[in-house]
Amino acid sequence: MSRVFNFSAGPAMLPQSVIERARAEMLDWRGSGMSVMEMSHRGKEYMSIAAKAEADLRELLAIPSHYKVLFLQGGASSQFAMVPMNLLRGMGAADYINTGDWSIRAIHEAEKYCKVNVAATTKADNFTSVPSQAELKLSSDAAYVHYCPNETIRGVEFPYIPETHGIPLVADMSSTLLSRPLDVSKFGLIYAGAQKNIGPAGLCVVIVREDLIGKTIPGTPTMFDYKIHADNESMYNTPATYSWYLAGLVFEWLKELGGLSAMAAINQRKAEKLYAAIDSSGFYTNPVARECRSWMNVPFMLPREEFNEHFLKEAKEAGLTTLKGHRLLGGMRASIYNAMPEEGVDALIAFMADFARRYG
Image (tube, rainbow, N blue to C red):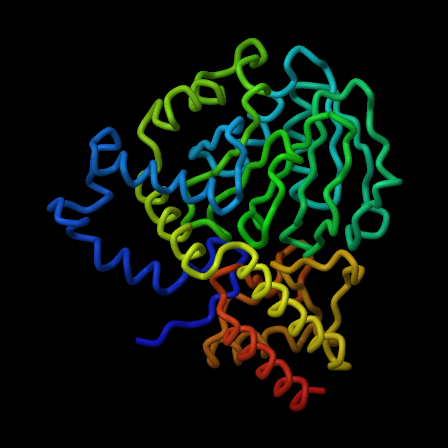
C-alpha cells in the first residue's frame, strides 16, 4: 500500500519512520511483553518513556531549568481557560493580540475570567497580516500578553516575537512549536496541541515559567491547576500515555535529523518553493502579506470557484490529500508541517503547474 501526501491542518502527518517504529513496538515494547498503550503510567517502563520524552524536548528547545514541562490533555483549546485561571495571579486584566480565528477563541474564553484588552487587531484587513511592534497598545496593568504566532486557518505568521517589557508573554504555538529553534526564555508560557508537529491528537504540551504557577483564581478545578500537574510530573491523573510515547519518538526523530536548526532549513525551503510556485503561476493567489506568510499553512485560491472540486478530485487521484481550505476561507490550504517530506511539496507543485496548464 502506498502512502499519500497528507496536507491536513491537523491531525497531520507523522514521520514514516516514527510510525514504523511504533508498529514494531506495538505488541511488545522492548521485551516488556506488552504494548505501551497497555502499560501502567506509574510502572517503571512507562516512567522511563515519559522521562526520556521530556528530556529530549528540553534538549531540542534548550528549555531553561526554571521552566516546567507539562504533558496534558484537553488540547490547546483547554488552555484558553487554563491560562487566565493560572496566570492572572490576583490581577484583573490581560492583553490579547487578535490576528485571526484562534486568537478570537482565546479572547472569548478569557473574557469569562478577566477584562481583556485587545492590544492590536488585523480584522480590518481580513487577518491577512500581523500588527507591528509599534502598533501594539499594551496595558501597564496586564497580567500577561497572549498571542498566536501562527494562525492555521488563514496562514498568517508573526515574523517577530513581541516585546512586552517584562509582562509575561503567552503563546499558542500549536502549529509552530518544533518547526524551528526558539528562545523559550522570552516567554512566560507556551502551549501547543500535539497534532501538528509533535505527535497524534490527545496531548497538549505546556512549557511554563515556575514563578507563574501556584496562584490560581478561586474556584479553579484541580485539573486546571498547572501546579498540580507540575508537582505530579503530569501524572496527577492517567495521562494520554500513547500520544506521549509517540511524541517522544518524534522528539528522537528530530534529534536524529540534526535538531531544530536542520528542521528549520527544511521547512523554510519547503515554504519558499511553494509560495514561489503560487506567485509565479498567474493562476493561483495567496492573500497574505508576504512578510507574514506562514511556513506551516499555505492557503491559495484558484481563479474560479468551480475549479475547486476538479482540483481536489484530481489531487486526491494523484496522492495529494486534504487540500480543501477551511470553511471560513474557502479555496485550498496546504499544511506542510515537519513530517511533510520535501518530495510531497515538490509533488504538489508539479500537480499545481499541470492543473494550471490544463485549466488556465
